[in-house]
Length: 79
Picture (cartoon, rainbow, N blue to C red):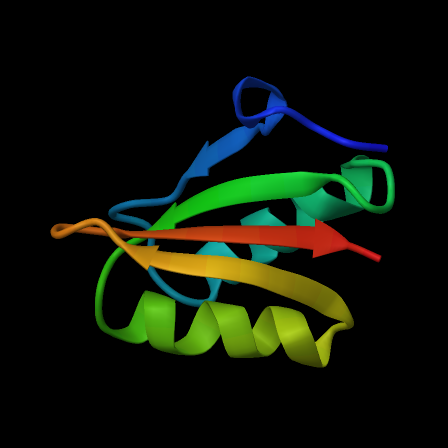
């Protein structure tokens, strides 16, 4: 399955602390079909340091991480 940029769902977790942001991301990914991307917005500091690694340890694929000045955009998919 392929997605266009406008079809990628967005989960805005700015202002949400760890580990709640990881749990919400994981729950959303579990609801999605394997292979589809999810875009997640995370705050700098602990969220961007912890969430990508935690997702990778759970078997999710972190596709890209972009620094967008005041937050980070993470694209991740369920394999």
